Length: 114
Image 1 (cartoon, rainbow, N blue to C red):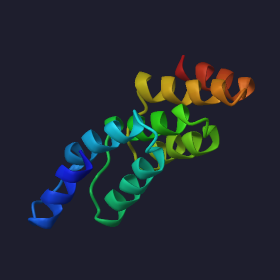
Image 2 (image 1 turned 180 degrees about the horizontal axis):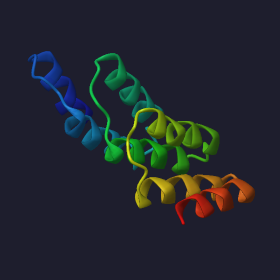
Image 3 (image 1 turned 90 degrees about the horizontal axis):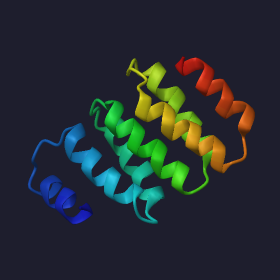
Image 4 (image 1 turned 90 degrees about the vertical axis):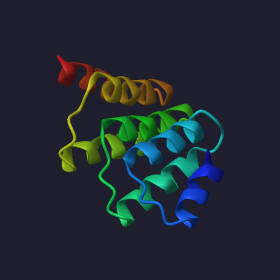
């Protein structure tokens, strides 16, 4: 997935959030969670508008690697970016809190969802 993204960049194709979200999701499912965060930063630098899918994928990448604080930071960025918080993003953030034994924060998120 990273190779395909690099190829597209090298050939000057205009990349959008769907290209990045596929690669971020692939990185999130492996041990390459830091690469997922880097790609998310690259998107911002290139002014590629992130959507709920990419935000949720990055939150999940952090969650899978017990980085609950980073996950909540990304979750907060969704609101600042005016991206609608959905069930998937809430679930990923709640799961990150659970893995970090941050039960109070997890319950706060559950109550926000309601």
